[in-house]
Length: 225
Image (cartoon, rainbow, N blue to C red):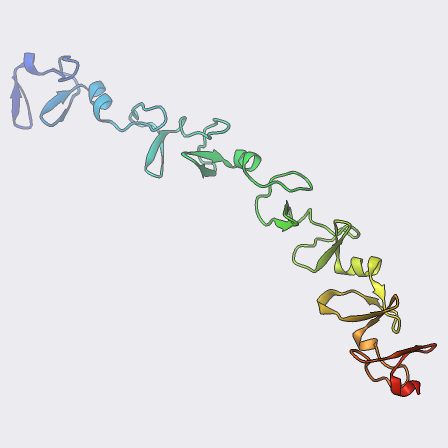
């Protein structure tokens, strides 16, 4: 006679309900009044890996993510198939991708160096750049976060563009950069800062007014009489 939790069996009746193996003097488990050997109990009731669908053996390491569970060796990158382990990963579709594979396959790549942009990139004319790659064509300073413009599809910082390409004021001879809303006046291939476009005699501003050109510069009609 065998007993367990106030229940009794003949020895010949004390067997696994699945494989029929005798459980006398052997480890066993019960569920819903049925008897099971350890192997059959695990096969029938133990949680299973969402990767290989096999059970988790006692003491085995498992990983859980978004309600799914994997063996350590089954929790792998969908690209390189290597175990993720304790490394960082990125969710992708129904799986996960290790960071190196994600950067190689899915990240934007800098149009200059063709390497992955992990963070802090900039976009110029629809193209992605690393901040450290988006440089002035002339002085190689970083352009991200400062004023710049382009010439012949090449970017220049404000200082270099002004130095290399800006027109010069016919009065003060300083460059007219056009940055920061700088206003200027153009007449017969000559250029003036708005603040410099004054009558050469009375110094009154000629912006938006009539003027005449003399050997000394521009003059208002009154001073030209």
